[in-house]
Amino acid sequence: MTVRKEAMDARVDAVDAVIVERMRRITDRVMHLTLRRADGERLPDWTPGSHIDLVLGDGTTRQYSLLGDTRDPFRYEIAVVREHDGRGGSRHVHDVLQAGDVVGIGGPRNNFRLVPSPRYRFIAGGIGITPMLPMIRAAAEMGAEWELLYLGRSLTSMPFADQLLEAHGERVRLRASDRGRVDVASWIGAFDADTKVYTCGPVSLIEAVVDATAAWRPGWSRVERFEASDAGEPARTTAFEVEVEGSGRVITVEPGVAVASALREAGFDLLTSCSRGVCGTCETDVVGGDPDHRDAILDDVERAAGNCFFPCVSRSKSDRLVIAL
Image (cartoon, rainbow, N blue to C red; front, side, top):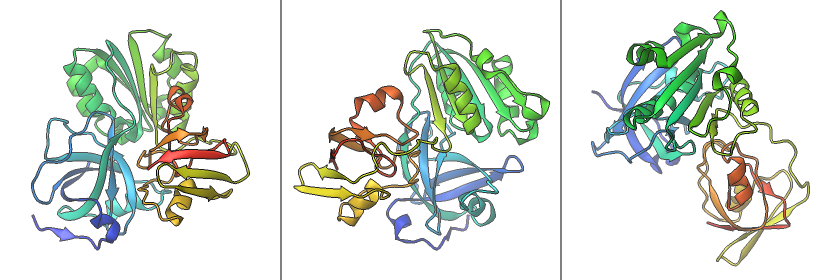
């Protein structure tokens, strides 16, 4: 394979370099990529639900779920759907990236962990199928019962649909929207202490599941969003202070300025990626004060604990927030 290093900026050099070993178009809009380290060494271990940052040659960083085999220490697999109205990352992958190119990766990180359960119901919309693939393998290996509801615009647009049907038969229910809508709430059913629900997909699907499981015990229904939900207006419209524990420094954060930006401006080194509160890169410990959570990662229990936040989007309800970097 000829290795072609894309024109990388300093940000790419700051993360692990990997080679695009293989690119394969699996639907009209979805490209399947296999990545391996340029030096042939093993990649960091990961668990079902994990994602990586993919850092492209133009400095663009996007997050993609890992879909391959957790037992393969030398390869990561991701799938990238071409977003016509996106910010350019997927177009770069589809139109510019080639097998043999060197790109950067960050992570893996896992904000969508699979927890043990006797039974699972997995719900995927479109490219949201990708984190479900390793979860299904893990559920099968644990001997758990599981079912998958996989929704898409059309059967031909749904990646891995044929493989799932062939491998798992009646456990998999496919439904294309051009053949009618599915009543997601009915498919989920009533609360069952032995069943956990995992959902990844577009906002409309996530909101339907959140509504259907709103009265459930916390943690029994878990979702991963492509985009942050509307967090509404911040809890306060005035400036607040951020104290960095152990530094003797207190930073004033003005309205309209992200905490992450204020910290960087003050000289603190803080790694961020999505700047939308969906990837988890900038997770920061909170040791004092009351954070105003505006991310799409933490659940209600985690928010109530108030011991971490994501400074790319989250703010403070209290006059001062004390954090540990």
